[in-house]
Length: 190
Image (cartoon, rainbow, N blue to C red; front, side):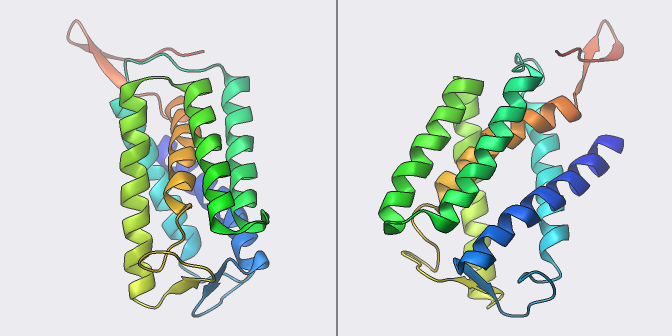
């Protein structure tokens, strides 16, 4: 329960800051602005997404090795930089797609290099993008330069990068418990 609360608050804060990149740059615009260019529901939505996805990621990766703490911190910083690039990088959506693809692939290569990690990043990219399409269809917000179904072509790559960076960070915050001879014991990590 404590890990879920940490992931909810941390995810809500981090992704709200990152989302401010999009609202300040004009990349996105909310239909009903509450504060800092965002809607009131962004913080709880971001927090719930990170908490649920993070706990799921930790459970699915229970037996996998974890990257060292400094590498996880650099990966989260790299994700924030990629989020900023999605807001301010010149050259349009194609240029952003290439940069975000390279960033997501680099994060996966530095932190993961497993087929399971690639599948999780792909799954988060699909689910996150479909969720955004649904919100856009409801008129909650819009992208300034959409390509398909109201979203820009680079959006899935941003989710993939976040899945890898934030997933490994969440797994360190919420280490899963596994069975050991009938006794449940916490997983030890670096």
